[in-house]
Length: 343
Ligand SMILES: [Zn+2]
Image (cartoon, rainbow, N blue to C red; front, side, top):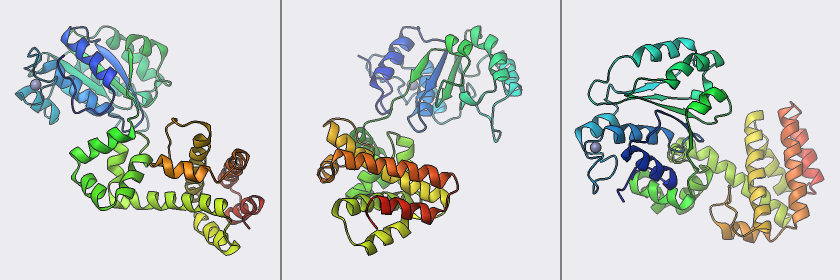
């Protein structure tokens, strides 16, 4: 079978489906690519565009796209006039004016190759009027035109749009795949994995299945506060587990209590950590969100009963609501620490 989209991580079923549709000339003229930020929608869109014009598409031994022919190189280096990225610029939504430009532009024949691919970024932020204006073009575009509508969720898209463009979902990627991909393609990742295996595995577990997010976190400046927050969450769970002194509890409370948004982030990290411990108690296989190392999580979970974990989750969730609702941060945290028997 001709290998396809080889540098796209995960999403194997989706890659195979696209390969078959492209090679059999069955590719729909429009798709919605739905997936969380960083799950590879842009990368996939660009490779679909390259595959449509690849000079080696009919060569069974070459991957699709081959990534080497003149057409692939031009498209993948973003230098092709026939792959058009449409975005909302610095506006909050994409309006009718942008759609009118697209409707005009599709009438011009492709420049270099036989197809024109429009990649519409943040399609979920198109206004209803813009979506309505887009319908006719989406229904009957010129034969050389393909539309790829990228969005984090299809929910804001009108049914009429969704019925004309099948939805392809990009999936969150398994931690092991993220690890090996990052080490293969990113020198910083390889260096970090060698110098600090723990920080590297923290990044992988904090990126929520998103390669894009993992790459952001490889930047030391972005990484530092996130790793510090995760350390704080671990310290909190350790404190609950081993009942350390009041002084230790007070130090931790001081570290959690920051500006409002930061405090909420700190509490959310604790909640995520506690949820992992609950999951460890329920099942052996559910993927964990906080801990990169399941053994560490299970060992910690063993020190709690399920009712205690549930009550801590409940307490943290209520504390988050109160902090968000402008309550006094230090007082609210002190109440929670006292109720949890830590102070
Ligand atoms: Zn090619």
